[in-house]
Amino acid sequence: MSSMSEMTVEEFLETLASSAPTPGGGAVAALSAANGAAMIAMVGRLTVGKPGFEDVQERMDGLILAADAARVEFLELADTDARAFDGVMAAFKMPKETEEEKAARSAAIQAGYAEAAAVPQEVARKAVHLMELAEDATAMGNPQAASDGLSASASLFCAALCASANVEINASALKDESLRAGMLDELAGLKSLADHLLKATQTAFQLRLSR
Amino acid sequence: MSSMSEMTVEEFLETLASSAPTPGGGAVAALSAANGAAMIAMVGRLTVGKPGFEDVQERMDGLILAADAARVEFLELADTDARAFDGVMAAFKMPKETEEEKAARSAAIQAGYAEAAAVPQEVARKAVHLMELAEDATAMGNPQAASDGLSASASLFCAALCASANVEINASALKDESLRAGMLDELAGLKSLADHLLKATQTAFQLRLSR
Image 1 (cartoon, rainbow over the protein chains, first blue to last red):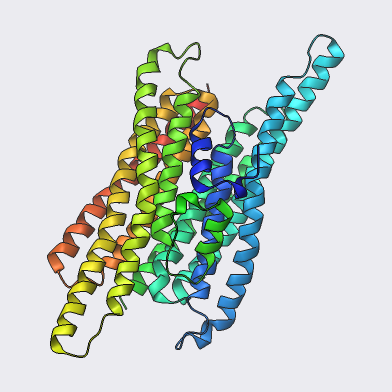
Image 2 (image 1 turned 45 degrees about the vertical axis):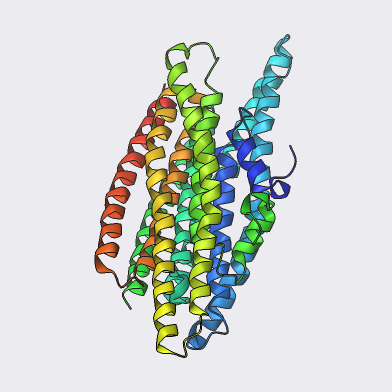
């Protein structure tokens, strides 16, 4: 599969809707996070240099730098996610005639699922971290772009939910109970933090509206 | 601006992150909804014709048809949203020397904001309606694609949140109180339904995992 970043938006959507197992929810998690990162940077750029926002200039410069870097990372993670799942599919096609082949195939499948869970876990971690920046963008940036700040938070929240679903379905195939439990524990904390940050950003948005 | 559907994913993200006022959260609302529609169709296509899913074949065929049509509509709504906001910007640039010019400019600004609120309102309405299909895809489709069904629901939920933020910020500029109140009333109902449908789909997903 070619890199998703080079597909047109329409091609990506057609491929997503097809019966190909990738791209799927894992890629959408990463791309939704990239949308969120892009809108944080957008709010920053609609704020810096505008009169009345001198006090937050430094914070906005910081948001732009961090969000631009995150956008590129998330775009790469969309491809990494698809490749990881393709790795699981490839492992299932390994020969299983001899005992040795069976063991090698089973190990490859387990390693594949661990990787296919680890990539969306990383997406969820980075997306929830970035939700803190989306809150600042909404609360401190140009109020005319507050809807873009809240949309950034919603897109990162969506990324965390999509990524979680993909961690959970891939982790459910793992035989290593402690690896699985560790992943699900971290995920529960991330989801709870995401809920909190979305609500805080919704509140910040309402305050900007009523000014 | 060229149609978003023809931009590459990377170009779209770069434009989104720029200081251009469009595309912004309104376009992301529509594109996130298009992602959701695409993943409903994906679950359908990973289910139809597979042994063991004969009972849900008809429902899956229906989901695919509806989701494919919605995907195309949402992609068009992304451009419509950007054009509507560009209309507001153009109205602000109208001459305001004479009383007549001032009145014409003010009317054009109000009409522009009404349209810029109506487009995301339509996106929210369609996205929340489609969340019912995402629940069926998750609950009844191929369980191996249940994470894609839940990701569809999360993407449509994100679309509803982004669209709401855009309705609210544009409606806040409307002088027609009853138009604004009507929009916000409908929006509150849609958001409440979206919350309910996301939770129901999360429950359906957990049931598919534990089978």
